[in-house]
Image 1 (cartoon, rainbow, N blue to C red):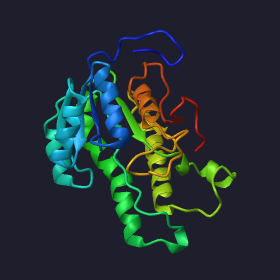
Image 2: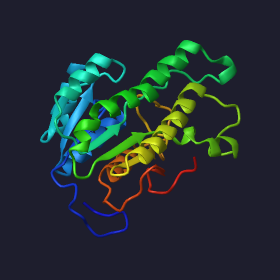
Image 3: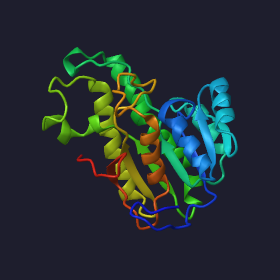
Image 4: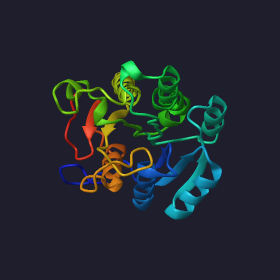
Length: 244
Protein backbone atom coordinates (compact mmCIF):
# COMPACT_ATOMS: atom_id res chain seq x y z
CA UNK A 1 0.00 0.00 0.00
CA UNK A 2 1.29 3.50 -0.87
CA UNK A 3 1.09 6.40 1.55
CA UNK A 4 -0.64 9.54 0.23
CA UNK A 5 2.68 11.40 0.25
CA UNK A 6 4.87 8.51 -0.92
CA UNK A 7 6.37 5.44 0.69
CA UNK A 8 4.62 2.14 1.29
CA UNK A 9 3.19 0.19 4.17
CA UNK A 10 1.97 -3.39 4.24
CA UNK A 11 -0.65 -3.25 6.98
CA UNK A 12 -3.59 -3.83 4.61
CA UNK A 13 -2.17 -6.60 2.42
CA UNK A 14 -4.55 -9.49 1.64
CA UNK A 15 -7.46 -7.74 3.31
CA UNK A 16 -11.20 -8.24 2.94
CA UNK A 17 -13.47 -5.34 2.03
CA UNK A 18 -17.24 -4.95 1.81
CA UNK A 19 -18.58 -2.32 -0.57
CA UNK A 20 -22.31 -1.64 -0.38
CA UNK A 21 -24.14 -0.74 -3.56
CA UNK A 22 -21.23 -2.20 -5.50
CA UNK A 23 -23.07 -3.48 -8.54
CA UNK A 24 -23.02 -0.10 -10.29
CA UNK A 25 -21.59 3.41 -10.32
CA UNK A 26 -18.81 4.50 -8.00
CA UNK A 27 -19.30 1.39 -5.86
CA UNK A 28 -18.49 -0.89 -8.78
CA UNK A 29 -15.32 1.07 -9.49
CA UNK A 30 -14.30 0.92 -5.82
CA UNK A 31 -14.78 -2.83 -5.77
CA UNK A 32 -12.87 -3.24 -9.02
CA UNK A 33 -9.91 -1.17 -7.80
CA UNK A 34 -9.71 -2.98 -4.46
CA UNK A 35 -9.80 -6.37 -6.20
CA UNK A 36 -7.13 -5.23 -8.65
CA UNK A 37 -4.95 -4.32 -5.67
CA UNK A 38 -5.14 -7.92 -4.46
CA UNK A 39 -7.88 -7.70 -1.85
CA UNK A 40 -10.95 -9.88 -1.44
CA UNK A 41 -14.02 -7.76 -2.16
CA UNK A 42 -17.53 -8.55 -1.04
CA UNK A 43 -19.76 -6.98 -3.67
CA UNK A 44 -22.79 -5.79 -1.73
CA UNK A 45 -25.88 -5.80 -3.93
CA UNK A 46 -29.57 -6.01 -3.10
CA UNK A 47 -30.26 -7.46 -6.56
CA UNK A 48 -28.73 -10.92 -7.06
CA UNK A 49 -28.63 -10.84 -10.86
CA UNK A 50 -26.99 -7.43 -11.04
CA UNK A 51 -24.59 -8.44 -8.29
CA UNK A 52 -23.57 -11.56 -10.19
CA UNK A 53 -22.88 -9.51 -13.30
CA UNK A 54 -20.71 -7.14 -11.28
CA UNK A 55 -18.75 -10.03 -9.76
CA UNK A 56 -18.18 -11.52 -13.20
CA UNK A 57 -17.04 -8.13 -14.51
CA UNK A 58 -14.60 -7.58 -11.63
CA UNK A 59 -13.22 -11.10 -11.79
CA UNK A 60 -10.67 -12.52 -9.37
CA UNK A 61 -11.11 -11.51 -5.76
CA UNK A 62 -14.80 -10.55 -6.01
CA UNK A 63 -17.57 -12.36 -4.15
CA UNK A 64 -21.28 -11.58 -4.16
CA UNK A 65 -22.95 -10.64 -0.88
CA UNK A 66 -26.70 -10.04 -1.12
CA UNK A 67 -27.33 -6.96 0.99
CA UNK A 68 -30.23 -4.52 1.07
CA UNK A 69 -29.17 -1.74 3.43
CA UNK A 70 -32.81 -0.87 4.18
CA UNK A 71 -33.82 -4.43 5.16
CA UNK A 72 -32.87 -5.55 8.70
CA UNK A 73 -33.24 -9.25 7.81
CA UNK A 74 -30.99 -8.86 4.76
CA UNK A 75 -28.38 -7.02 6.83
CA UNK A 76 -28.42 -9.65 9.56
CA UNK A 77 -28.12 -12.50 7.05
CA UNK A 78 -25.22 -10.81 5.27
CA UNK A 79 -23.40 -10.09 8.53
CA UNK A 80 -23.77 -13.71 9.62
CA UNK A 81 -21.75 -14.76 6.56
CA UNK A 82 -18.73 -12.57 7.33
CA UNK A 83 -16.50 -13.60 10.22
CA UNK A 84 -13.76 -11.02 9.72
CA UNK A 85 -13.70 -7.77 7.80
CA UNK A 86 -10.96 -5.18 7.32
CA UNK A 87 -12.70 -2.51 5.30
CA UNK A 88 -16.31 -1.36 5.11
CA UNK A 89 -17.18 1.12 2.36
CA UNK A 90 -20.68 2.48 2.89
CA UNK A 91 -21.35 3.49 -0.69
CA UNK A 92 -25.04 2.69 -1.24
CA UNK A 93 -27.09 5.85 -1.57
CA UNK A 94 -30.08 7.39 -3.32
CA UNK A 95 -31.06 10.85 -4.53
CA UNK A 96 -34.75 10.64 -5.44
CA UNK A 97 -35.44 14.30 -6.28
CA UNK A 98 -34.11 17.85 -6.33
CA UNK A 99 -36.77 19.61 -4.25
CA UNK A 100 -36.06 22.46 -1.88
CA UNK A 101 -37.13 22.07 1.75
CA UNK A 102 -40.37 24.11 1.32
CA UNK A 103 -41.33 21.89 -1.63
CA UNK A 104 -40.23 18.63 -0.07
CA UNK A 105 -42.35 15.53 0.23
CA UNK A 106 -42.02 13.94 3.67
CA UNK A 107 -42.07 10.40 2.28
CA UNK A 108 -39.22 11.30 -0.07
CA UNK A 109 -37.19 12.54 2.89
CA UNK A 110 -37.88 9.31 4.76
CA UNK A 111 -36.83 7.14 1.80
CA UNK A 112 -33.64 9.11 1.40
CA UNK A 113 -32.71 8.88 5.06
CA UNK A 114 -33.56 5.16 5.19
CA UNK A 115 -30.76 4.44 2.71
CA UNK A 116 -28.29 7.27 3.21
CA UNK A 117 -28.33 7.49 7.01
CA UNK A 118 -30.21 4.69 8.74
CA UNK A 119 -28.86 2.11 6.31
CA UNK A 120 -25.29 3.17 7.05
CA UNK A 121 -25.95 3.01 10.79
CA UNK A 122 -27.55 -0.44 10.56
CA UNK A 123 -24.90 -1.93 8.28
CA UNK A 124 -21.98 -0.49 10.22
CA UNK A 125 -23.27 -1.75 13.55
CA UNK A 126 -24.07 -5.19 12.12
CA UNK A 127 -20.52 -5.59 10.78
CA UNK A 128 -18.70 -4.11 13.78
CA UNK A 129 -18.00 -7.56 15.32
CA UNK A 130 -16.28 -8.64 12.09
CA UNK A 131 -14.40 -5.34 11.82
CA UNK A 132 -13.20 -5.61 15.41
CA UNK A 133 -11.46 -8.87 14.49
CA UNK A 134 -9.27 -6.96 12.05
CA UNK A 135 -5.90 -5.56 13.10
CA UNK A 136 -6.51 -2.47 10.94
CA UNK A 137 -10.26 -1.77 10.61
CA UNK A 138 -11.31 0.94 8.18
CA UNK A 139 -14.72 2.52 7.50
CA UNK A 140 -15.33 4.83 4.55
CA UNK A 141 -18.65 6.64 4.24
CA UNK A 142 -19.30 7.91 0.73
CA UNK A 143 -20.80 11.32 1.41
CA UNK A 144 -21.12 14.40 -0.80
CA UNK A 145 -19.61 17.86 -0.88
CA UNK A 146 -23.19 19.12 -1.09
CA UNK A 147 -23.59 17.93 2.50
CA UNK A 148 -21.07 20.52 3.69
CA UNK A 149 -22.92 23.20 5.64
CA UNK A 150 -19.98 25.55 5.19
CA UNK A 151 -20.08 25.21 1.42
CA UNK A 152 -23.87 25.53 1.48
CA UNK A 153 -23.74 29.00 3.04
CA UNK A 154 -20.55 30.49 1.57
CA UNK A 155 -21.61 30.58 -2.07
CA UNK A 156 -19.99 27.30 -3.11
CA UNK A 157 -23.38 26.04 -4.31
CA UNK A 158 -26.41 27.84 -5.76
CA UNK A 159 -28.39 29.50 -2.95
CA UNK A 160 -31.80 27.98 -3.60
CA UNK A 161 -31.14 24.94 -1.37
CA UNK A 162 -32.16 22.30 -3.90
CA UNK A 163 -31.99 18.54 -3.23
CA UNK A 164 -32.73 19.19 0.43
CA UNK A 165 -33.39 15.54 1.29
CA UNK A 166 -30.19 14.24 -0.29
CA UNK A 167 -27.95 17.03 0.92
CA UNK A 168 -29.22 16.99 4.50
CA UNK A 169 -28.89 13.19 4.59
CA UNK A 170 -25.22 13.56 3.69
CA UNK A 171 -24.80 16.20 6.40
CA UNK A 172 -26.23 13.68 8.87
CA UNK A 173 -23.90 11.03 7.48
CA UNK A 174 -20.96 13.36 8.10
CA UNK A 175 -22.05 13.69 11.73
CA UNK A 176 -22.19 9.90 12.04
CA UNK A 177 -18.66 9.75 10.66
CA UNK A 178 -17.45 12.05 13.44
CA UNK A 179 -19.28 10.07 16.11
CA UNK A 180 -17.98 6.70 14.91
CA UNK A 181 -14.47 8.11 14.72
CA UNK A 182 -14.73 9.27 18.32
CA UNK A 183 -16.29 6.05 19.58
CA UNK A 184 -13.88 3.73 17.72
CA UNK A 185 -10.36 5.02 18.39
CA UNK A 186 -8.76 1.85 17.00
CA UNK A 187 -10.49 2.37 13.64
CA UNK A 188 -9.98 4.80 10.81
CA UNK A 189 -13.41 6.25 9.98
CA UNK A 190 -13.70 8.93 7.31
CA UNK A 191 -16.22 10.48 4.93
CA UNK A 192 -15.47 10.95 1.24
CA UNK A 193 -16.65 13.81 -0.95
CA UNK A 194 -16.50 12.07 -4.35
CA UNK A 195 -17.29 15.08 -6.53
CA UNK A 196 -19.96 15.27 -9.21
CA UNK A 197 -19.77 12.05 -11.24
CA UNK A 198 -21.47 10.39 -14.18
CA UNK A 199 -23.40 7.62 -12.42
CA UNK A 200 -26.94 6.36 -12.17
CA UNK A 201 -27.34 8.52 -9.07
CA UNK A 202 -26.44 11.67 -10.95
CA UNK A 203 -26.04 11.66 -14.73
CA UNK A 204 -25.88 15.44 -14.95
CA UNK A 205 -22.16 15.63 -14.12
CA UNK A 206 -20.02 17.50 -16.57
CA UNK A 207 -17.74 15.31 -18.65
CA UNK A 208 -14.71 17.30 -17.51
CA UNK A 209 -14.97 16.21 -13.90
CA UNK A 210 -17.41 13.34 -14.03
CA UNK A 211 -15.14 10.27 -14.19
CA UNK A 212 -16.26 7.89 -11.41
CA UNK A 213 -12.89 6.13 -11.36
CA UNK A 214 -11.33 9.22 -9.75
CA UNK A 215 -13.89 9.18 -6.96
CA UNK A 216 -13.36 5.45 -6.48
CA UNK A 217 -9.61 5.99 -6.15
CA UNK A 218 -10.28 8.48 -3.37
CA UNK A 219 -12.40 5.93 -1.50
CA UNK A 220 -9.74 3.25 -1.97
CA UNK A 221 -7.08 5.53 -0.49
CA UNK A 222 -9.21 6.02 2.61
CA UNK A 223 -9.91 2.28 2.84
CA UNK A 224 -6.18 1.57 2.72
CA UNK A 225 -5.02 4.28 5.11
CA UNK A 226 -1.88 3.55 7.14
CA UNK A 227 -2.20 3.37 10.91
CA UNK A 228 -1.05 6.98 11.27
CA UNK A 229 -3.68 8.22 8.82
CA UNK A 230 -6.55 10.58 9.67
CA UNK A 231 -9.83 9.59 11.25
CA UNK A 232 -13.13 11.36 11.75
CA UNK A 233 -12.44 13.59 8.76
CA UNK A 234 -14.30 14.76 5.65
CA UNK A 235 -11.93 14.32 2.70
CA UNK A 236 -12.30 15.07 -0.99
CA UNK A 237 -11.53 12.56 -3.72
CA UNK A 238 -8.28 14.43 -4.36
CA UNK A 239 -7.09 14.14 -0.76
CA UNK A 240 -7.90 17.70 0.35
CA UNK A 241 -9.98 18.37 3.47
CA UNK A 242 -13.61 19.43 3.00
CA UNK A 243 -15.17 21.82 5.56
CA UNK A 244 -18.03 20.48 7.60
